Image (cartoon, rainbow, N blue to C red; front, side, top):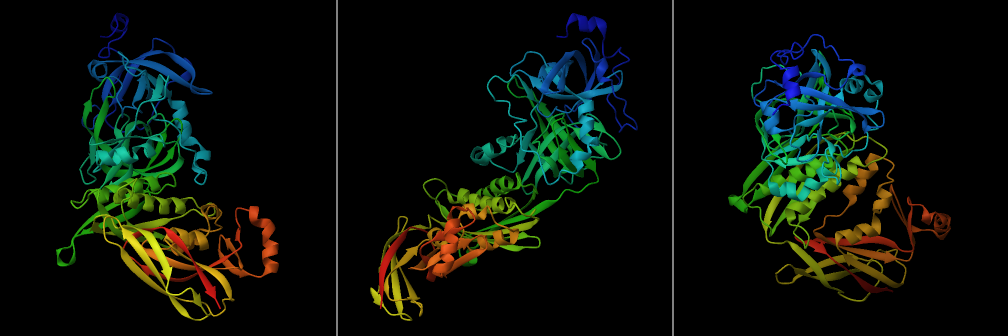
Length: 588
């Protein structure tokens, strides 16, 4: 119940200070002077509890907490009054709700106090700090230097009693299993993932204007799958809005679609009260995610990356195909994780999905100005993951390597992914290898025979004819029969070298040189020195050049070895192959 002093001093209905929440965007916003903030002031806060229209809540100012949000960043402490806030408490999604005193904007509800508080006590971010996000010229010029992610929404840290009000990241069309598997990746970015508590309907009519107190959403994924974070608008002018009163990710400069939102219901809970949201029409883009606020610009268009995932099940005329279409935000930190969980969900939502299932994967990732990254291989379950997880991790790796390039800002144009479902585990281990004969002359052809042991199936024999190069000197040499991973290690830059790639073109070329994992590969090791550089491999180096490069072995950009590896042949197997064996060959 409200305290007696509050009831005696000011009732919202009688107070001239507490004007109703604005129904139209204000032509001019007056700001309450921060220097005049003191205990005992009374005002009103506006938020949406249900529908689209903000409702008033009484606010009692309890004082100012110096440096509570950081050095030089104060927080105003307030207590909410009224039937709804006293019943629901401080609600996830309420962050950004504007607070007015004498009809002047004081700031935004943005922090919760305690975990199981019996009173709706909250922290308020001063509007002056939020306006700095709008007015900062530094923010507008920092596109190439985003701020590292913070723990903005991490309210589980031991001992923390003042935490940002959650901005739940609502997953539409995703299973709880997907969040259980990959939710920690989003929590590490400062986001709180939830599923089944909202949706997306971009075609829905929502003619009501955006006003202070409206719900507004930042879109990370849209289409057949959706992902959005929702908070409350604090300030609106003709070109911009400010919301949240705290960061969502604190990435700094970004580009995310900004939409209107409808609050379907507000669910009270002593542990975590929250708003159930449906996002609707797009009205612009969020362009800044900073310590005191997120900034949205009306009419701006955020860049999204289109993705298609097609899963085919059955064989021949009985084939059935299921396609999932969605777009993901273009952001070096977010995009690989968004694609990871979205690809996984696209696979899992088919009726054919099962733990003992494999997929023949093909496709391409398009990068503007740099061609395509090939996507190729067989994704099979292993002792750690089912095939659907391994597929998602494979795609995550490709996106991560593109965005990790230190020399260029990639512009990913889209991705098309096709998966042919195959029952069972299509994995096989290399069990045995042998040569058709142990001696050969340069130019002669011999046969490498391999025995594969598929998972829970009879052995398979693979034969690979190889021709000994005419320039091979006589002597004892080694042939390596291996999976793709070993063959790549012999001839492609290591991960450390990849991180030093001088251009995005080189990075894409290296990924496209990687061998599909369903092959067996025969490599000839000769005694000449070999150097692997970020731009390619130099084999059979003259002694003089090897001596020059030898002191550079400690340079992570140089990979020097005493043998040259040359691929002589390969064969597709129809399995995700693992293992390697070394065979001795005498060249006469």
